[in-house]
Figure (cartoon, rainbow, N blue to C red):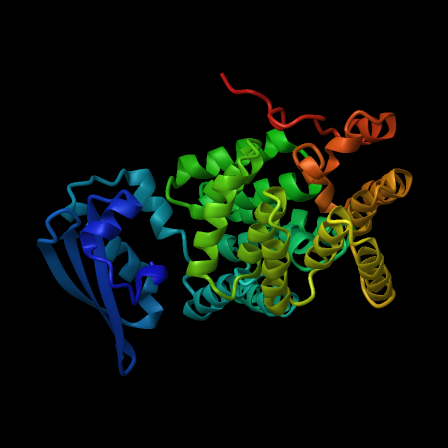
Length: 389
């Protein structure tokens, strides 16, 4: 993992943090047109090297190279891959090396979650699918990006919805047994369709196909997270900012937790850090306005509201952002009006209404109850998905 690249932690510490019995350590270098990868298998508890090997490959044979490497490692830890798993591994990546490279670059850019990196990621995914129209991972990446863009980059949900659905459908059609394809379908169901049972089913199917797929774990966690344990949330957010100091979402979550714990100054400081790298995402602005309003700094909150209105003349701003500041100011009717507008444009941020404590003061108001019913959402934390069993 890149987070351990320059760590001073021992292998035993890393193994405990990851819950891993064995660790794979590797290096790669280019020698002309050939790649050489050296791999070591190490026991995390005693740090004894159990096995090592070097592999050479031409870029055009990346699929076979991946299969050989993963099979060799699996054999050394006494695993037996099923024929179905081997077949899925063989068909996982494109046979076109350039398409594969474009896909990896697209994923890297998308993970930064800013408007410029999203635009660049779309270009990379599009070129990958032009080179290989049946490349399910590239279609899945595109679906993830389109589905999450209204949340990460203030893009109109109504504009992204059909594009996300089409990309997810093509991902599943090309690779129905690939975890990323099923997870992409879950992303569309969660963020845009507001069909949480379907999203849960898709994420669970993705994890059945690949229990190690981190994005499916994360999104299933988001879907099921209703505990409101802000102290635990604060701890996870702190870890995120350490691992990714330029990752704005970590600082945004840090601000969210600090606000719930009554740490106003720390929340505003975290929001400032988030704004620096978010590309102007409205969530930082609206949360700042809400915090100022709740802290009694009404004039400052009104100024934030005016700034947001000015921004909306230049680009799309989610209606939820205005509603949040108004509820902080105690403007119940105006907040409800903005939430109705958010419903009309499929604003993805309304998915937080059932679980965000900021809306508790109006949770029993008839217009709020009706709005959640129209969205198909429950009106209480803990009831966001159908119980299993």
